[in-house]
Amino acid sequence: MPPSQKKKPTAETSPVEGAPAAVRLPDGFQLIPGALSAIEQETLLADIHDIMRRAPLFQPRMPRTGQPFSVKMTNCGPLGWVSDKDHGYRYQPTHLDTGVPWPPIPQKLLDLWRTHAAVEGIPEACLINHYPAGAKMGSHRDQDEHEPRAPVLSVSLGDDAVFHVGGPKRSGPKVRVTLRSGDVCLLAGPSRFAYHGIDRILPGTSNLIPGGGRINLTLRRVTPFD
Ligand SMILES: O=C(O)CCC(=O)C(=O)O
Image (cartoon, rainbow, N blue to C red; front, side, top):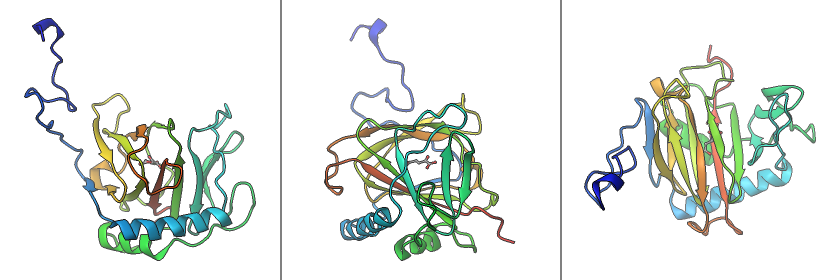
């Protein structure tokens, strides 16, 4: 290609054509590819479908504007994260629409937390995000929790997703990684409050979820340990 059309190398491109790009992830961010086997993913998905029957997906909305998110959500655990026009982002012990307490967190997720979270306390909330093809999640920081020592532990199921993670400023540099079904990642230590989000879902990359799409599970500690 003529020099004028040459792409500048970025975190996603390499100066050597065809070579994988070097990616420097933020300090404390961990990606554990293939943390769950195919069987473990199927078993966990069955647990999540059971939770969705008891606590149906709801439509979260932006505070003040009431703009709907492109993902739908539900929760399990003593607390669940919700957002609506009038009361904004918050944790509460009951479903936004039905008023029923959230179902318990499946044992497999508690085991993942014990193995990877490297903290004494247990998670209190598991947010379940459902992404159909075309859904995304804008860059944001998880800051509604009151225990900065606890990581956010995330599990991906279904179609691949392009995830970005940066630093403490929305405008700062970001790196992009593909999260695949069975991957676990952690926003921990210095990356706990890093900006992050989902740029896009790559449809047809997994046959785990009937009809396609992606489910993401994030385990969080909401109240202080002590
Ligand atoms: O879907 C993901 O991998 C990220 C989810 C996320 O950023 C969140 O729930 O705050």
